Image 1 (cartoon, rainbow, N blue to C red):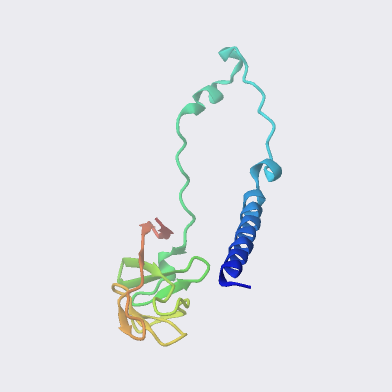
Image 2 (cartoon, one colour):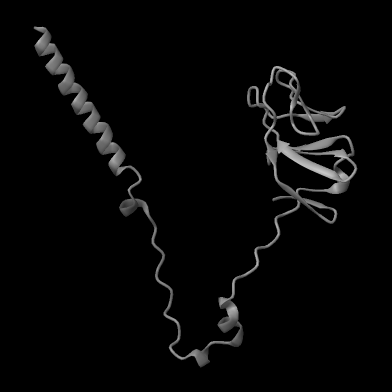
Length: 161
């Protein structure tokens, strides 16, 4: 076999493989084969008098309900904090009444920080420590700060913003 013949065989085989992959991508999860369609809602009554007064006034925008509280302020000790693993958030109180939140994901290797002690947020994987004041690293190997997260304090409730 010559080099030209081998090259043509490889290009042909590669093209056939690409075509097979692309045809699989096109049909996978096609909305026409897997989408569920809800039946149309009944048409509204033609006469506005048939609507109850409450329904007629429902066109006004509804107020968004408040987010569920992450913690009570009493749950976060002054000079310390608490890790919320499910939300990947750590909430701290560096000084009385000053609450802050940071990502609980260590910037070194992506582990979840485990504790807040002695005014540092501590990662168990490689020993990184972060300041509760601003999330900056105080002990390596992490060199980047924890990402600050927005929270609101409403009365005695702490919520993600």
